Amino acid sequence: MGRMALPIEDYAVIGDRHTAALVGRNGSIDWLCLPRFDSPACFAGLLGTDENGHWQLCPVGEWTSTRRYLDDSTALETTFSTAEGVVRLLDIMPTGDDRADVVRRLTGVEGTVRFRHEWVVRMDYGNVHPWVTRHALGRNGDDEAITAVAGPDQLVLRGPRLPRPIDHRHADEFDVDEGEVMTFSTTWVRSSEPLPGRQRMRRRIRATIRAEREWLECCDLTGVPHRDVVARSLLTLRLLTHERTGGIVAAPTTSLPEDFGGERNWDYRYCWLRDAALTLEALLEAGATGEAEAWRAWLLRAAAGDPADLQIMYAVDGARRLPELELLHLPGYADSRPVRIGNAAVLQHQADVLGEVMIALAHSRDSGIPSDPNAWSLQRQLVNRLGKTWQEPDHGLWEIRGPAQHFTHSRAMVWAAFDRAVRAVEDHGLPGPVDRWRELRDEVRAEVLERGFDEERNTFTQHYDTTEVDASLLVLPLIGFIDGDDPRMLGTIEAVEQDLARDGLLLRYRTETGVDGLRGDEHPFLACSFWLVSAYAEAGRVQEAEALFDQLVGLTNDVGLLSEEYDVVGDRMAGNFPQAFSHLALVQAAFRLHQRR
Image (cartoon, rainbow, N blue to C red; front, side):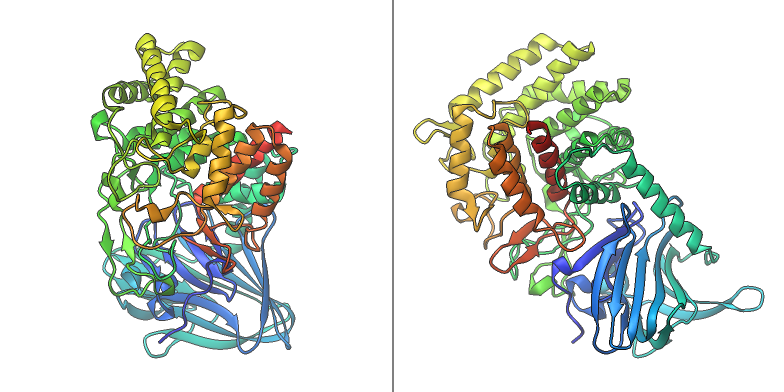
């Protein structure tokens, strides 16, 4: 039995905007899919043991470590301290080209430290042992490399001293002296192609860090609370945006559990229209417009065709088929089964999605991004189709696997879709049947206020046939459906606090009602508590908003990252990591709070 994965919060993320790797504070890369976010993993120890694939550089014997991102970049620096000395490990995935490289650079700081190097490649999510070969390359045979080949994939390990084969793994031990620098790299290439040449990694590392810093310098974070945490969230959201396609993934991982030991394990390595649209809004808040244009182009490609065929999610490149499968060979993180790849939610009807898309595209127009006739044509067709289907029940933004309902949040987002279509005509002069859209907008709002509101308790409800509440109701003032200080909204905030607060944080909803059709429970969903910050701010309760925001920022790990949920009792993160939804909600709350100050 090999070493199990670390606590989720003990990982950090690096990436090249094509894919991402999770690096533990022990110097082990336990998760990496190559060459794309949604490709099969070649290091999958995160969902099993190190026998399922990992790449570790770590001192032998006793050690402690601290880590940080080099200022305003995604270059991760881990400092290992031992009784014999200190060594720094820099982890980075260089950007700006089509190569898929993970670069790891050891630098001796003090003394001499004995290091262990393990490179255990398992293709196809830790299931396939590759054919491993050692090569002497270059004119004089001085460019040594190890290749691991299985099916279409090939990994190439280079470095000044390469590990030796030991029982289906490659391992080595060596000393790192003060002032010594050792650079290792793993490169993905198709197995049918020749080995890539050696590159000058120092130049690529500098260029990557410089590009990330320059991007963040273009974001306006003046006066925003907890500027460093907001900046890290923005960099993380950008990292989750595919550089070539413009698709934005919800997280770089799959099956990190919402319920430890339970079945609530989902694959988030895809592009949800909702999550991507909300990410786009967060980036636009900070003035990052380039991603908005790239995502709009991605949307046009992904949604091309009949509006009736619009899906709620797609692969990174816009592909539609994401069949959900269970990987029986993996025991799962913390023995949480099943491990899933693909996502059956792709087949669901979620009526809120178009509303989020329309809000994000309206935000892009208001931000001065040049209009695209094709983009508006698509929006117009989608809104016209919504006019014929909006009364149908749906599965909601939480993707419940129970019966479809008329979710109040979904109906409010239907209102938002019509509202933003009307505004596009009124404010930007775009063509469309504005009178019909106004009529539909008013009809939807009247229905929500009548059927989605509990007069007796003075709160909006989760759906039309229940008195339960849902944390998603907190976004109603954020989308302009109702004023933040309206008595009905104040009553909703109070009901959400009473029913959904657990140890100071908010649940999405009460799982014991059975609405989601799943066994087990879950932990507070971090985005919901950030929504409460924004709702407090809109209600004029700025001091409460500031206090809650300070508390939530304190839940980030040591390098400023957030997972999907937080187990307050266990003081640990839960769910996929890092989670775009958590980080985008943090950014939006920070800007909302800044505006209301």
